[in-house]
Length: 434
Image (cartoon, rainbow, N blue to C red; front, side, top):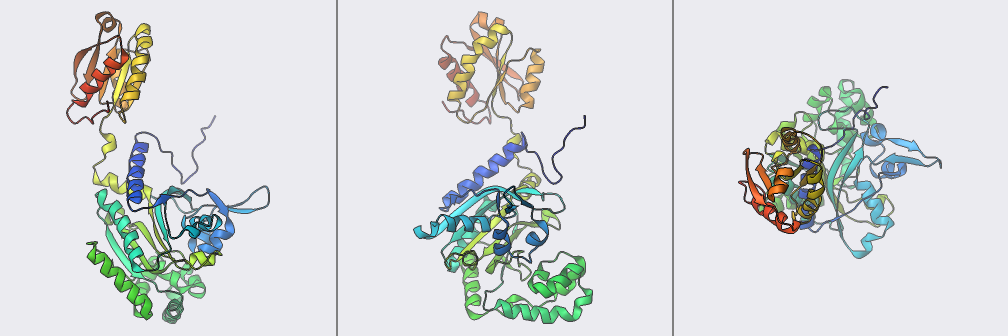
């Protein structure tokens, strides 16, 4: 019978890779909490209309990439392709704005039908934040600083690229300027960009087609036509970042791919990711809440692709998840298996975050050691008939290939304390909680 494989563009995550994911998730959650952000979780699927209205009908996400389906009740639903619109929907449905400004973060999956490639899947995962209720540049600087802390605390070398794409007052003028610039060159544009020219010329700037790049690079920039309030806002954001010691470059090519963005947009990019260099991106979306039926509410946020970020961490070569940690308890013989159960239970209660592994299988001692090492254990506790007769346990440093004996007390608590104290004293071993 032929095996059933995971759908194309998806991936199973299992040990030790899942440990890398857990470590990153712990890190980003801690940083978000440090900035005063609370977690929000939204459904995996939403009404299709939410993304058509919120993200924009002319965007690639809505026009090409969404996973749409009709359920048994005839409702048009879509697997979540991005997080901001669902967060706004939840914000309005539960009247969260009545309590004042909201700072929210999320960690979870998104779904887009696109060509799978390194770090980009049809089901992928994001960490992101959304800050609602602050129109001033201070919120822009805060959100960018939060993302910058994620990069800095993980030692990831990136460049922050910053731009302003104006607002509802100056952006229509920029659309006209772009149309007048690109229209005479229509025949030299890619097919996708020719379509965008008529529907939304701004989207041409987001094109990755090689034949479009020369024209895009020479195109007028939004910074040339910003209205006075948008120019002042952008200048203030730059000043706050400089005052916070956050380095950046102004890049008029940063436009992001969603229609709801206004004013500040930004990307953290890495040269180590090749053509798809964006690690994290976001910006301000002051009109989104209103477009989905809520009161006028400013907002700003970003999304970080976890797969791509983990790729960068792997390239850095400082992966702590591969460091052996934990204790494998090896029972040799039927009586030993019976007698070690209370010891294992006590070790697990007292060991804090230190993993305690149990190997109850019948095998030669060398096989038990190989199993423990494959499980990434740093140490082993061995109990067999001889050890039971002598009233002791053998403890082994699997990294150093050295072992000692400890007294086996009638009380599992006493033996467990002795084992954990020995483990904590191993060179470079994480201390076990007593």
